[in-house]
Image (cartoon, rainbow, N blue to C red; front, side, top):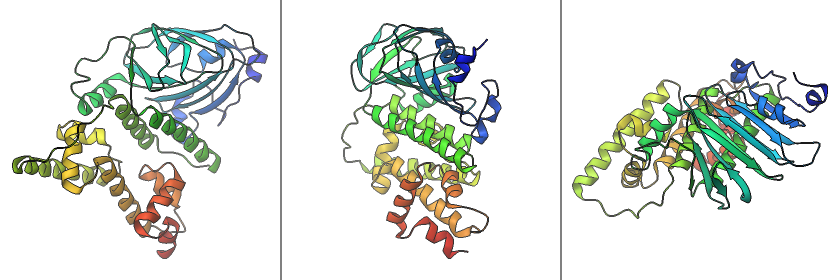
Length: 344
């Protein structure tokens, strides 16, 4: 039972109970809380059974932001007092996590002194964390089956044998993941404030792709000139990728690099080389331009009285509206608002 003092420490965006997880689709899976009691910190993460213990002085234990998308959860915590977390992940739930570098931080037998450190924790794994006061941590939880399938598609050698315990590795994309996580939380919050919703399917897809690319980030070899036969294979690869992308758009879904790799049976490195030969850019840059073009078509076909730029941007996976507007203008030399207005 939560005490009155504990309840006062909770501040909920959307005023949603922990049990009401089905409301994530309309933004109500977003929560923010200033926490006084360790038991509350544990109870706000019901998808992972854990116990929390406060280990240093302080009335306020932590501040937590979380986004529950049903099959995925995004959690960011700032510890105002030191805490220990003990628990075990359930079947088919894995996490990718990171923290601000701190030599005192401990994740089971691992530390986090390296600025590029991230952790992967698989299903059915016992964990024991010590998080010092002042440390910020974050994690994203996934269906392990879905995550491993995507990781093996992007980087078959690295993920051929999925880890069965907590593993620590260094990535060149940790900062990208941190910025993206902040964007996901801010975008969901902004949508709630506007009385709109972020499509949970689109958001889950973006979160999965970003996390997979972070976990599979390796130093790429410099591309070597391709033979004629290799160039032909690259062309076939990119045409298959293009066909898949078009099919996903026709289904009103936003394709990702992970989707493409799984669909056509190539790893991310092969796709990188192929697209540099095909259009002189990375597959990620090409896919982003495809989404911009689709958004432009949707704006041109829309009724300005019944739709908004925000809605169309979200539809094609653009969560940062300012960045979307800037990239749109850079490519098409007019703002998305101007495109919509011209077609009114």
